[in-house]
Amino acid sequence: EVQLVESGGGLVQPGGSLRLSCAASGFTFSSYSMNWVRQAPGKGLEWVSYISSSSSTIYYADSVKGRFTISRDNAKNSLYLQMNSLRDEDTAVYYCARVRVGANKYYFDYWGQGTLVTVSS
Amino acid sequence: QSALTQPRSVSGSPGQSVTISCTGTSSDVGGYNYVSWYQQHPGKAPKLMIYDVSKRPSGVPDRFSGSKSGNTASLTISGLQAEDEADYYCCSYAGSYAGVFGGGTKLTVL
Image (cartoon, rainbow over all chains, first blue to last red; front, top):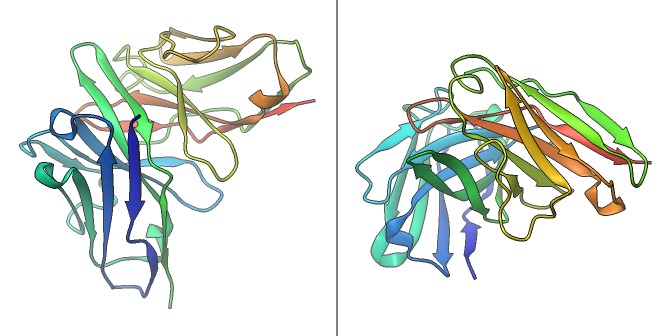
């Protein structure tokens, strides 16, 4: 059974930093691209970042570019999101999601349960 | 990219059909056949319901179907059931491995 478990969320002051983790199991993690998607309270979903299976290709939404860094450790079956210079508008539940991308496909087939990040003074 | 446009809410009675639209541009919905739909119950993670415009993952009832015409994609749920009440989000590939989501539609089963 595919499982994605996020951790690392919490309360942080504006301008602060936080590192999210996502532990993957039930599939060959090193063979799949991964993403972070967030959802502000009462709002819709927003794509945040993409990383390929080998970490060779990385993309960010404009809203987080230059402040967030996605990474992965295939030996530890883990995905990370380093978030710096946090702003109030970064407050959201952050989901890690496995993405199926390539020839004739692009969709998120498995999602974690999410971890809440609250940016507030 | 700007979010895709969905109606804020739709409703239907048990057994009826409802359709949720998702409008984008030629840079996302109209440019690729990579539209997916997600169901989200309150406090839960999104669940994939439709991918690549009209394909259903294993385990998703065939009451759920998807289509696309030009820059607008649609999700149709037939034979509405109480458990279908949830928020629904469309998503399209937008280039450079990025996805763009719709604002979400709240489905109420009357």
